[in-house]
Image (cartoon, rainbow, N blue to C red; front, side, top):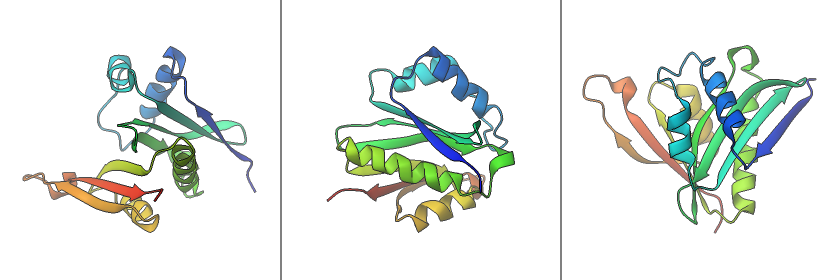
Length: 154
């Protein structure tokens, strides 16, 4: 069995942003490349959580989210590096993020994904996320954007 740990960081500094950008560049599904300015703008003045999941001490994936308002926490970016897939790491990150958000007083989790990412959709639905809306892409159905939400507190 592997030694797996999850680090939680709520202070997102320049080093953390650079690490997220580096990790994003290693994810084949991420067609859009993120830059420092994009991350800084999105995270500015928000309560944030960056999780790093490690397998045997090596970073294997991450999840980055932020508060939309006092009740809703948005799971923005996340992925598991290709060499570490099929170990259940994404599910561990998701559960850890939900627990953190609940402890911080959030009651709703929200995430966006695309129709083409069936593994992500299955995982979210299996964890009681519900489809809240779909933005259709008229040219390519696999690019339909799906917004999902989960009530984590009554």
